[in-house]
Amino acid sequence: MNDRTEEPGEVISADYVIIGAGTAGCVLANRLSENGRYHVLLIEAGARDLHPLIHIPAGFLRLLDHPSITWKYRTAPERHAAGREIVFPRGRGLGGSSSINGLLYVRPFAEDIDAWEKSGAKGWSFSECLPYYSRSETWTEDQHINRGSNGPIQVARVSAPPQVCDYVMSAGQEMGLEKIDDPNADTRGPSIWYYQQTRDGRRRSSAARGYLKPAKGRRNLRILTNAYVKQLILEDKTAIGALCLQHDGKQIEAKATREVIICAGVIGTPKLLELSGIGDPDVLDNAGIRTHHVSREVGKNFQDHYVARLCFRLKDTSTANERSHGMALLKELGKYVLSGQGILTYSAAVVGAFASTGFSNRPDVQYVIAPGSFQSGRIGELEKEPGISCGVWQMRPESRGTVHIGSKHHSAAPVIMANYLDNEIDGRSLVAGLQIGRKLFEQSSISRYVINETVPGKHATSDAELLEYVRENGSTVYHGVGTCRMGGDPDSVVDEKLRVRGIKRLRIIDGSIMPTITSTNTNATVLMIAERAADWLLESATVPLDESQHSIASNNDTGRCNGD
Image (cartoon, rainbow, N blue to C red; front, side, top):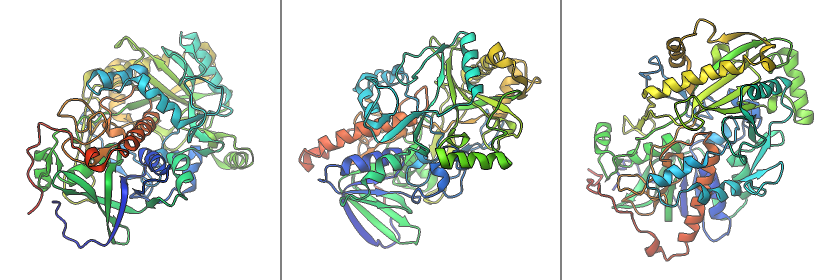
């Protein structure tokens, strides 16, 4: 039994208790409450999504390290990234990271998902997952057999991209990249294309707006905000609920008659498991927590995309830089309010590309090209003079990190050791990707507008100099996954139906279950995972309770009881 030193307050019972109202949590709250048969309790540590910048696409620039809308995480000093503590944004509030991300909607390569099945996660092939990608979206443009037309998340093309982006598209074709119309439907090799956004008109289409808003009026759905889950409530090897602490200090026991579902994300999910005594005994002992159930891979297998950017000063063309200051910005505000157009509808990038560095037999670097440039090349303040940025990340990094608690106190941030660039091939691929990016801007379609490269600049010419720049200036692309790996083997944290091994009535449904990272942006895949899991939950709900609440055997099931 879990240690509890405080008397419980209110007890709330529901069929399903969902912990975390991020992307996956919002999907599940909608789908599980849809038929009216089951009572659903959704618990979120943050507040409602009321901040106006959440809903303005370009507002993400001001939200990535916001003091109340994010968790303000930092990695531990990164040994291969100049010893830096790197900002690691995670959304806090309804919608989670879907309320603060860069709005870019990119489905993975089929091989990414097929690799999950090949690694032992039976039933996780791309063909089996494709219908759930479609079910989650409404593609607002041309009809396509593989695109959704009636889903909660609105997906749209970038509206009225500036002409400089057309120049970049032409430059890509000059250097041999195929121009494709729809990167989420067309066959993709080395190619260049316009990004699509999770945007509904002038507003962000977050999971909270798409899934939760239509469900809020349902009598069988209760949403608790500003309620932090301290630990799971376990009886022997069964999850029966969660112990919550509200911002006013009031405690709540949330009891689940069917299942507890953790949707706290790549950082929050392993943290909650470990605080509840589920994990590697060495980690738990070091934090002063007694082991309830041994699951040695909790918090391991962390993967993320690490990005480095080139920036160029431009002439004779318009960019977001000069339109984001002074009177020009006021004009853009007016344009946004009156017509829903202009730079405030831009997101993290406008033009995207896939390229091959030669280290892989398929595209292995992805580009995020934005009609604006940032001071020092890092997302933040736009420069005042015309500029453009070209970010690149390795699509399938080999480096692996960890996320573990360092204290038994629930308010303490976990230790995030991303281990960026730990594997040599990751750095070499990024350097090669930067060289390809430079080649792109040497093509005549765009080079006539380029004055010079401002970041990193001409001083970084050799591979060694570029690698040093990558180590000193790279950052996360906010795609962390993998810390509660799914698999068919007994060491995996969850099985193929996302049930926690060795614990009854407990599932994990979020990006932490991915065995390997998708090559591309991850939010579309988290939506898919949650949509698919909702079907399994509803199917299992038709089975009598004592038959559906089985646990999944684990060869590590030798844990000590958590207690005094």
